[in-house]
Length: 368
Image (cartoon, rainbow, N blue to C red; front, side, top):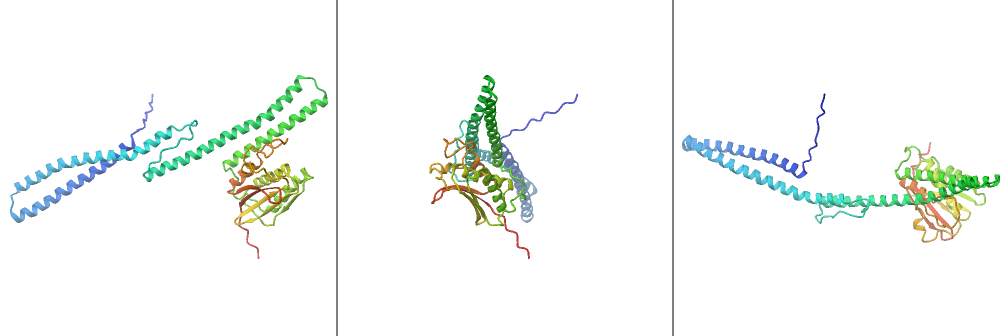
């Protein structure tokens, strides 16, 4: 029967390993120093003896005395240097061990705990600062995740509850064909909302992971895309005029389907919460392409503007809408994934303006 050898990992503290390395190097240095000292002494004794005629026995006694002194002094130097190296390594690593203990105490229930930064302004202090920055980023991500899960659960609860209620009522009480049809229509609407919410959540998850398509998948011409989206949404709301002002030749470093979704969300938000006409403009802004969508409604409430792109937020919760509150959040996520920017403000002449800016691709050289 073959036995598998057990491999027990050596968990030797770092200060011990550093001291051992120092001791090995120190032993070599002291041995070399002792050897050179004896060699030089022999050479000097030979030269001095030849010049003065000192007997060989006297030279040998002097050499023996030197050997005894070296064998006594060098080990003492070695031991003292090794002890000093151990104490120095332990003192240098003590702040690291303290930070390790503090980091081990940070849990999901105490995400606001931070490490003590030593006042030395050296590598240890920079390490503590870097770890604190990392803990801050992790806490921010954890807070966003908890808020996102809570909001998603809240948004899912309403359509699921309505869907269950419609089905229970349809099964519990006898209904005629008209009532059953109305119940099925209501259940279908809630199902569509659930499907849309699930798709929005998946898209947000992909954009948060910077899960974009290949770099070659970019918009070849922005103007046709804007006109295509405007025509599609114009057919869905024929009472609201949509105009597009975009010069030809604008290209953005973002996949076509992502930009289509972002612009659709901007225009749909203007249609749903503003008044027509809806104006869509695009132009160069330095090395960026800026796309603006303006409506002529009452604009955003001032206290809502800083949260316009937050998830599951709507300016008017009292209105019965079929939206999920994720439209502008998805647009913001698409802009961030493309290393772009986004924002919203109220136009001085009335209405709300929502914009995104995306990295512009260099224009191809004109053919001769």
